[in-house]
Image 1 (spheres, one colour):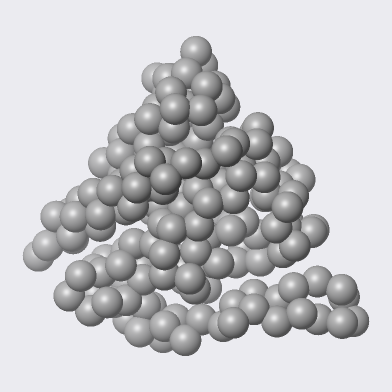
Image 2 (image 1 turned 90 degrees about the vertical axis):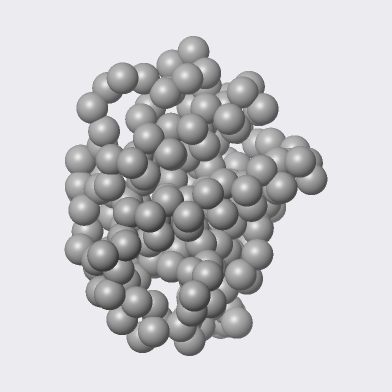
Length: 192
C-alpha cells in the first residue's frame, strides 16, 4: 500500500512484495537485461494506434513496461503523426528507462488490475510526477502483465496521451485484452 510522507507532503510508492520473485523470474525469462524487443515495439505501435483512433489524440504512445528496480520499456511505440505510428527509428535505450518514482505503472502493478486515469492531475499521487511534467502526460490507461504460470506481475502494458480522456468500459476491456496479448507474446519470445 502507498504511504503518505508528512515531511515531503507526497505519497510514497506502494510496497512491492513481489520484487525479489519478479527479479528472479525476469532473469529466468531473459528479461532482466534492459534491451528493447522489436516485437514488443511493434505491439506497442498497435496499442498506440488503437487508442489514438479511439481518443483522437495524435500524440498517444503505447508502452510495454518491465518493472524491476527501475522501469524499462521493452516495448515503446514510435511517435505518432496523423493518428498512426511513424516509421521513424525506435527510441534509444536511454529513452526507455524511468525511475520507479515516476509514472503510474508501479500503481497499476500494485493494484493487479487495470488503472484508468482520465486526467492524471486528478490523482493525488501525480504531484511532482516527472512523467507528467517532463513528457506532458495527461491521461493514462494501464493493465498488469501477470505471468500465467507463477501469478507474478512482470510489469504493465499502458497507453499515455497528452490530453485528458474520458475512459470507457470498452477502453478498459481493450487494455486488459492488450495485457493478455502482451503476456502471450512475452511467453512466446522467452520460451527456451
